[in-house]
Image 1: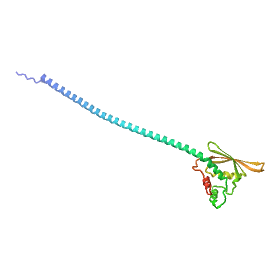
Image 2: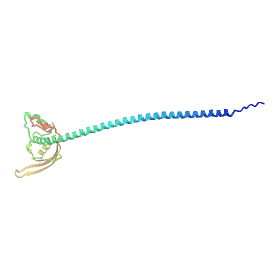
Image 3: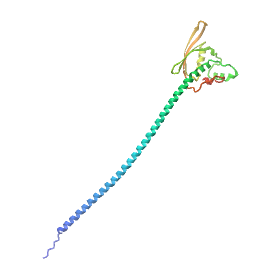
Length: 232
């Protein structure tokens, strides 16, 4: 009787096993290739992003350097302006020190002078009255005996007057002057001149000399009270 072997032969089984293993290996190789490709692409993207970040950082650094240079130039300009302002302040102080005291003395001399009541002086007399001056007052009723200025510009005036009213009129005129600030009468004392047998008032006061007047006064010519510090 003829026998038929229905079971697969060992050779065929071995071929099938090899075919299954080869497919697995191929799949594994494909996965590895895909992973390598993905890593390559990821690395390329990271490299591009790193290059972009480096370029941006370099651009920002350049902007920072330019801004620092601009800031330095501004600071140098501000320092230059500060030095110029300081020099101008010093020069202004020197000019004021040259013109301030003469202006003060000219005003005091003007305040102790009575203009003639003439038609040519009517405008000046009106300006005096507007400033609170008594145009009928006799300036010879007051005479200054001493004047002292300290380094701060504080001026102390010593003088004598016939009466308290005469001293008050003098200080009223001082108050109206643009050449003095913070005018302050301080003391008045009644005294007696034994030789002349006359009573009089010794007074003292002080004020701050105003050095900020830009121009020197000119000689009065009838309508120039404002030029000597009166308040029209």
